[in-house]
Length: 289
Image 1 (cartoon, rainbow, N blue to C red):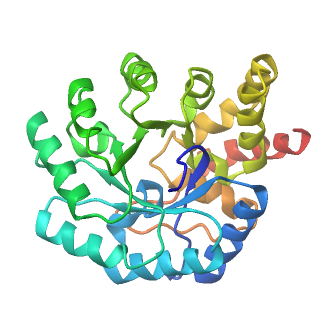
Image 2: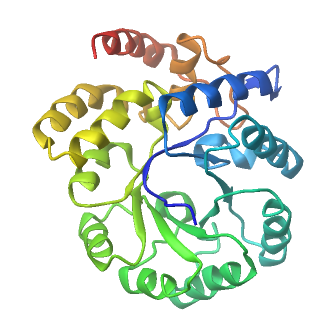
């Protein structure tokens, strides 16, 4: 089974004139793999999955798997219709994926007991590991500590992408050692690693992934002071990348670096001109790191 740890990148979906730019996908995936990232996530929230049809999602997944055959790949799976979710899961797991990343059903705001039933039902239907995605500001419902512990009792539920915003809960789940806890909040990468978390699923690591790997390696080696110094050099850029809706600022930055075209799909809008101007000097500063 894949070890869900280290620095993972939730891939953006590049577009060219409204269509998926598969050449850009391949270039970006090769770059991230060569940098040494632990794994990749397709159709996480950074990948604009709600703006993609299911056929586009599967085509994107196939392209990533073909480009990175020796690197574990998670697939995002989010919805609020259980029958459709099971059907999509069946099609997804026909591919050689490492696991599925599943958020709570959005809009419905289910009870805590319903959340347990939901995740367990999907895990029962899955042949691959399931990674819980706790992101209440997108789904409208927070997974509470006792609920997460009950969810973690299922043998196929092995990891958590933690965007819950409760550091006390994060610490308790790390201490429980039932789930591999990966932060999904880029500003918390250093703190979660230092607290003993398994790693991070970090959108910001599209840009200079080597620096995020260096931070992880420093923490593992007990060089917290050096890790802290490097992280605080990156922090202004990390903050700016999330000042406007993700992934618009990230796509603007990657376009400036020549990796992709600066395109998102509605209802998202490209990053503002003001934000792009602020990005330029921060990206140039990375040359010194």
